[in-house]
Every structure is written in C-alpha cells, then in structure tokens.
Amino acid sequence: MSAIAIHRGLFLGFQRSISYSRHLLAAKEVFKREKPHLNIGTIGHVDHGKTTLTAAITKILSEKKLASYKDYAAIDNAPEERSRGITINVAHIEYATENRHYAHTDCPGHADFIKNMITGANNMDGAILVVGATDGCMPQTREHLLLIKQLGVEHIVVFINKCDVADEEMIELVEMEVRELLSENGFPGDDIPVIKGSALSACEDKNASLGKEQIVALMSAVDSYIPNPERDLDLPFLLPIEHVHTIPGRGTVVTGRVERGKLKVGQEVEFLGFNTAIKSKVTGIEMFHKILEEANAGDQMGILARGVKKDDVRRGMVVAKPNSVKQVDHIKAQVYLMSKEEGGRGKALSQGNQLTVFCKTWDCTSFIKILGKDMGMPGEDCTLDMKLIKPVVIEKNGHFTLRDGGRTVGTGKVTEILAPLTPDEKEYLTS
Image 1 (cartoon, helix red, strand yellow):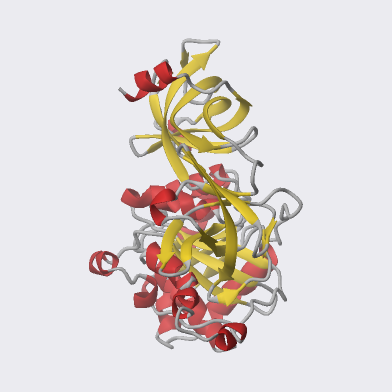
Image 2: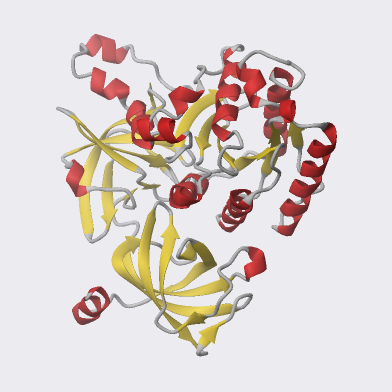
C-alpha cells in the first residue's frame, strides 16, 4: 500500500474542513481513549499472506463493529504495489478488540524494501509473524525476525497461513521449524502462541474452522500474550517524522508514532534534523480521522503545524519539545557485530568502513573508526567513533542498526555525544 496515501488519510478530515462550517468542525468525532492503545504489525516473507491477513482481521472485527473492513486492494492501493502483487511501503490500519485499540502496520516482505520494513518495525509494540504453510520459513522470515529482535520488539504471535492448501504433516513440520527459528533468535519458541488457519478463507467466508474461527483465536492470543507497553508520558515530547503533507490553506502535516511524552493543540514544537531547526505551533492533532484532544506516547498520529513549508521538513526529522533534543553528527558507540549465523554479513569491520546507520525514521552514511584495535570480527563487541555525513537527532543510550549492502552488520548503542565535526572534516567526508 502507498504509505503516503494512508498517512494522507489520517488528515482527510483536515482537507475536507476547508469548506466546512465551524459548526461541522465542532461536530467532528473525537477519539475516545477508552482502551489501552497498542501498535502491532504483520511481518514475514513476501507472498506469505501478510496483507490478506490484515484484511481478514478487519473483516472479522468489522462484524462486531470494532473495525472498518479494508479489503486487500484498499490496503495495497498503490498502482505499483497492485501490479507487482507485493507491499512496498508501510501501511497503517486501525481496529479494536473488546480489550484494546490497535494501530496495525502491514510491513513489506520483499527484500528490496527492508528499509521501509525497519521503519514499520521501529513503531511496533508486538508483531504477528506470518508464515506460509506451503513454504515454511524463508529468507525474509529470518531477516524480519532478526530485525525486530534488534529493534527491541520482544513479543510475537505466529500465524501459519494457507493451511487450506497444505496437509497436516506439512503444517506440523512448519510449526516445528518456526518454533526452532524463534528460539535461535532469542525468543521463547516453545511458549509463543501459534495459530494455524487461512486468511483467504476468512476474507471469502469459506471454511470457518480455518478462516473466521482462527482469526478470532489469533486476536485473542494477541490480546492475552502481548502485554500493554509502558509509555514514557512524563518525558519531553518526541515524534520521528514518517511522512509530510501539505493541506492547502491550513499548513503542513507530519505523521508518525509518538516516541515519548504528550502533546496538545496550541503547544510550541520544534522540527529538527538534517541541519534544519524550525519552531512552530500545533494547530491540530488527529489519529485515524478522529480529533485527538491530547496525543500520548505510542499514538500513530498526524500533527498540523502552522508556518512550516512542506519543503522545510522531511522524513527522518523529528518533532520535539523546543530545546529538548539536539542534532549531532559525531558519536561514540558500543556495537555488537553479528556473525553470519546470526544473520550478519559475516566479514570483519575495518578502519574507515562506510556503513549505513538506521535509527528512528532516518538513515545516514557513517564513517567508522574502531577504537582500541585494528578491526572488528563478527561475533565481537567493539567501540566505534562514528562520523555522520548529516546532523541527525540521536541521544545518548539511543539504539541503532548498522547495515551494509543489504545485510545487517550489527546493532549499537550511543555511549557518548562527541564534539561536532569541523567544516574541514565535513568537506572531507562528503568530497
């Protein structure tokens, strides 16, 4: 699905409101925070049925008036995605159970779009791993598990899909393989709920024992197994920007997931990143077409800001409480270099290597200096001096992923913010 289309949908109401009277605006629906909010997502290999499962969940929950049914085409609605039959961008869907309100992220499974998947997984409190009963664990099954583990997603529920076209023996073998893979990646493979069914059967109202009943069982497992996350509500507001849109006559809208803190209309905020710093005032907040009276950490939402041009802000920047965070381009970090068996690239890290750093919604090239030794071997920890080619928002103790040529090199944690790069150093790095 086109992520731009979905995020623009968050602010459809803002677009329509240009021609609305004040009375109609006053009557607009307000989001009621009556249940705990959780961010969840579907992960797994391309064509194992992540988007079909997302559609099935909305269909079954819509029968209880807990969701609006979104069929496959409504989720994968970009022409390129429909023609290729794969999800390219991250899509956000809203639904609820009797116990919770969910924002659901449908992540791309194709290897070419792992960058987009990292953004989606960064926002998750828990995940549904979708595995096709006809194929079992495939390359992106493994890579997605590896990435969400690196990004701190600890709770997973498994849905073995396409059980309507696989025999019992095959389904049992796939379950054993999935549990073994989960254990290899540091998850409690023996304890994780595994639901076996057919998302397509649920969408087509066929074979209720594999369709509707298993979707109900899946959401029951999600409700019970994935705990309510602790939110950092008392810390200064911070939202990494995923997408930027302009609403004519109103201002610029940015969308993303609130990482910490709270926000109300009328408060001052600062847009930071990539050598840009702009202060603005919040004129509107919405989540899934509904007005938010107060945004809280964990909300997947959009902010309408006055006086900010679309070209001034972009994905990878943050919206923050003024003066609460800084842009940096030089850090010291402790990094674990993953072995080939763990999904790493399997070769040594050398002085002066250029690697791509992924953090929040930004990615940036970094030049590496290994401290205390000449090279870092897979499976080892090492201390790095990292010079970034652009100033970005990252804080002490912030976590990041290092990748090179489509492979994960390692994961790291910032231990110290170092002195900014001099003009000569910047010129040398970018020349």
